[in-house]
Image (cartoon, rainbow, N blue to C red; front, side, top):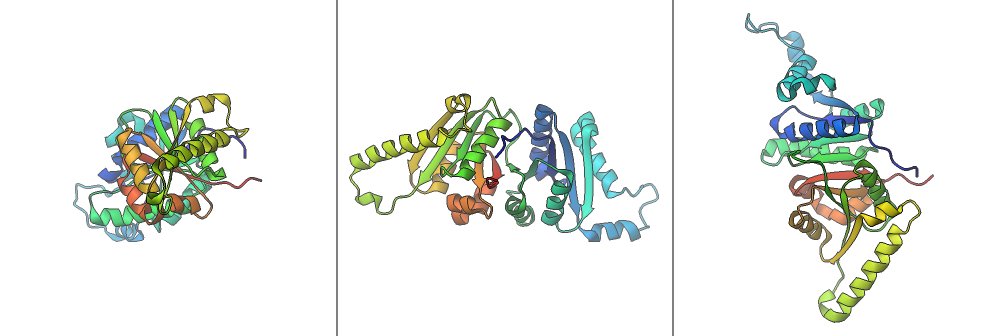
Length: 293
């Protein structure tokens, strides 16, 4: 696997509602930081364009805007002159399918999107689209929860010490070279309550040192990356531990490596995938695993 480069093209998937404002702000900040092209993508229901085509009875003072013109106006309203640097794509169809097609056609290196938390209908629609993007996108998907008040400085990478986890770490280090990184591994041992507590803690410490050392000894991990990466291994439910750690340590960004069919994502998060995407404190970056050639 070649060393990942910083994104040159970012696709912002937005429905232009207020719940996507944070994703918009973060996408603009990242595009400026990386000097990348930002493409704002809006997928509309075909019924909306049919109304635009056939409704010719608006008020006499109102010019009926095209979907593209309306999106440009809204971006201009929200961003001012910064909107002039954003390219806009508006297409019809099923959101996840169209967005994946756009990202592939444009050669985008990152997809950025928001997520609904408070609106039941919005959560059902946007949440389903995000989950399908995560499953289907070969490019990393950044799900934004928080306001972009600062650059990503404290990042935790959820790991099972697999190749997918290593790729997620390498990509994160390349994307965010100034951030402090933590490898976090949570695991559950059946019947651990019956184990001797002192022996268990001693064995856990030995395993933490061995796995972390072996993982970071890979030839692709240079000395600078080793120096800025901590390893944390905890016993318990992985999804609960990860959420608690992110909240307790005020983590800005959580990164998860996903195997081709989401095996690691499922193993780490289990049936709570949707809950994690919607409720995890901080933003979430899902990195798709690319098999070695």
